[in-house]
Length: 249
Ligand code: B12
Ligand code: SF4
Ligand code: SF4
Image 1 (cartoon, rainbow, N blue to C red):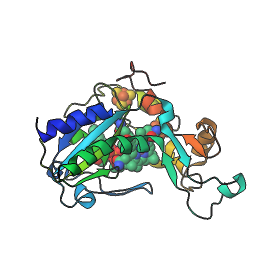
Image 2 (image 1 turned 180 degrees about the vertical axis):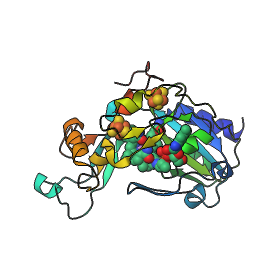
Image 3 (image 1 turned 45 degrees about the vertical axis):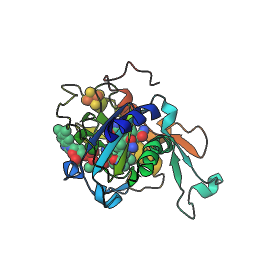
Image 4 (image 1 turned 60 degrees about the vertical axis):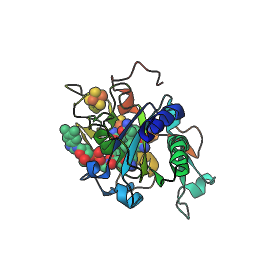
């Protein structure tokens, strides 16, 4: 058994359904810096300066409740409109991903290597270069078996691992179901207008750059199980025929 196959076995045992490995050189030229106001995308070297291998892992999001986001602090309704400090938010699938990927960090560290989890390198384009699938017209990573129903996390290490081939097919073909299904017309093939996305609108209840009609649709469609939580939109995932036969409702 090599270190690479040990790690792949560990990842499968932890519940990841797809994985692939690239060197940092194979990930050059991917998106970097601020994505609108949402996320500062980092290079692998910014996360771990000694990085030699990047492992991309996909977890099958088999239930919509995995998309729940919960604010860390309870605030009465009147204060929620204008919180004095920004609220911290927990997204269930991020917590699950970190928890499961920890098995690999633990293993690598015990073997004497450095290892870091990352949710802040550009995960979709990195996943394509690691061979997991293609970027779909909804801009998400779609895999041949699960379509866009996978959530992504990276494990970076200074161990030298065997790499996989980048994915070169376009799995979408003539299909445009996700583009047509988006209720706010946020999508054009392979492009998104972030301020029209219901997930952005729900995450940023006070953002001024969300068009009024999008805000109205967000208020109508976003499911809020409690005043402190909401379920992120998955309409452009549910619309995708690839991998739909798997349970996802
Ligand atoms: C910022 C962000 C958002 C923003 C912006 C979305 C966006 N598409 O950029 C908002 C808040 C709107 C958002 C919404 C959602 N998100 Co989000 N988001 C991210 C985040 C943090 C960065 C995404 C990013 O890199 N954007 C930057 C742009 C430049 O990247 P890009 O889309 O790859 O852009 C490229 C394409 O447009 C491409 N391109 C342009 N023209 C063409 C033409 C062709 C032919 C091709 C092939 C490509 C192409 O080139 C661009 C540059 O490379 C990632 C986590 C991460 N660290 O990567 C999660 C992530 C992408 N989100 C995720 C999810 C699931 C969602 C939602 C479904 C909400 C939910 N239920 O969780 C929605 C889906 C909206 C959508 N259709 O994209 C998952 C996606 C999993 C997957 N299978 O891909 C991620 C990876 C989080 C995770 N850890 O799993 N998200
Ligand atoms: S997450 Fe919802 S609003 Fe955002 S692009 Fe997908 S379908 Fe449209
Ligand atoms: S719904 Fe169709 S166009 Fe959209 S990602 Fe899936 S296969 Fe591609």
